[in-house]
Length: 390
Image (tube, rainbow, N blue to C red; front, side, top):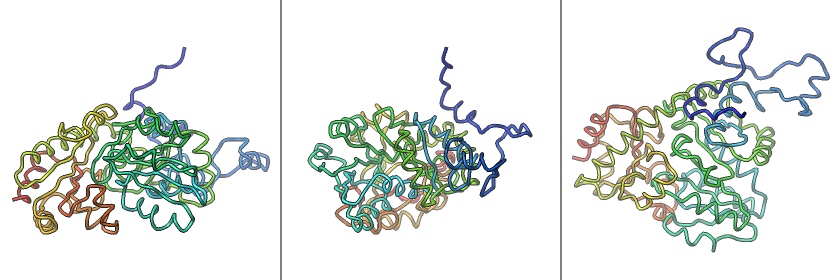
């Protein structure tokens, strides 16, 4: 009889590396660059991959392995590889999958640094990208070319908190024999598992909600074993791997991911409801608000609405500047997914170098605010935002 599958929270807490001879309850930190071998044959067999074991911390490490194992179980993935940052995960995944002359179809609403890869660096390697508008998904198939390798998307998107139908994207990929690569950073594996809806690979910036306390950088890609194998080989040579210390911190953080994300989502929904009724707010976007244009899709594929609320203050650039300069408690930062509530002005920070037309297509206006809800009491968060709006 097969063992009954454990619940998400249990897997997050009980997935651990094997105990050492000291029988510790909490996994120790393995700060070592390399590992030793008993004899020449063991060393040969290990490097030939006839024997599975840690060789060198650029390839693998007990702390990194534990972190990856947890994320794989959370996402329902076959395998994974961890990176020094979220963008290292994005770039290494793309660089592994793409050859000179290839083509990508991507949602136009992507993180600014990802957009920079598509527009500044990939073209010099003869790799092209075609964008589709979040509100015009019916155009996706017309963008597919004979050399298209995969469809890439974030959902919910950064920073507009738009939602894409994962089943719809997966059906297109299957029809055209393409891979589906999804950035699941905003949702986390607790709220959404894209592999269940047909994704081949899932990417996270572990810096965000996976850490949840603004302490360390990290990234991870999980998915099909044969694809991860190729990503591993590329990363083994190029060296973007996660440090053991960061993996140790992140693995501990995953133990509280579910309980933290629930509070983040509760706070976010309450703030979104407050903002919808505020006279100085032009519009509000939050996946679990009924006014969100893709509310039904969000309810289908997400457990809760996430920690990010996007809204527009009146007055454009000056209105936005006045709002940010009036904030007293919330943090002004480009990060997100912290215990502390953060407000960001995407037009002048994370997406400042993105072309105006692309910003417009992604719904990024001059007065747009991205608010990452923290774990403070919601009354205090609302009070600070209310006085800043005033």
